[in-house]
Length: 292
Image (cartoon, rainbow, N blue to C red):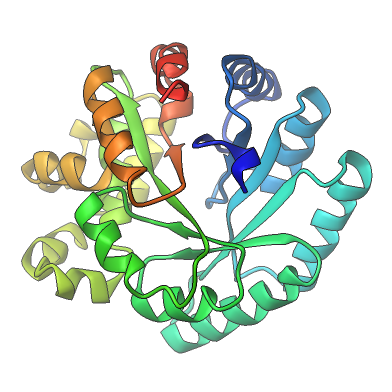
């Protein structure tokens, strides 16, 4: 998997076609080999974004991630169509969707990942030991939802075999007008696994963060307003330093480079996720990061 390089950039479907193409062309010119397209409620379909980027660049494209809420047959059909038009440029990342029963989410994700693996390079999004252990038995790679080296050392202990390891986390070079978006993303990531929360004794913090209506905050940001207009933001700002230091790749350029280097001692690839792609300054400084 060396062909994908050590650094990837996440691009989501909440920008115009022109903006997405501009970003994709820029990161390709800088030397990034792969972009990862996320799926999120309210964003455009990731397969639509993949087609747009594939038409306008030679980039490899990873889906990071498609949720198992989708019918797996539809996912397979969509990727087959893309591959038919643009060649073997796609990696499919699948992760648990929203299910009331965690066991149902686990079984559905593993079942779909095994079907995908028959035809495509397949990665599984993991934040807990059980799915890490099971998916590492057959998947080509794992997308870890952690960027703190301590957390990565913990989760990688559950791998059953050597696989391509990806650290995927919110990233931004500060200062930036998108720092509030970074804070929201860090809150979402911090609550991704109950087992993780117990392991690192974060129950008290997690209980407070669970009271935050992140969708209200996301709506505020989409409308161009500050999250400080919401009471929810008080809890986020209370834990701002904790969230940014443990669940993001952020800070000045030198800070970001140091953190990425520490991650690459454990993982093979780092994805600079939302809101990195939104910030023109961060994108222009990306050439210094790709040189790592």
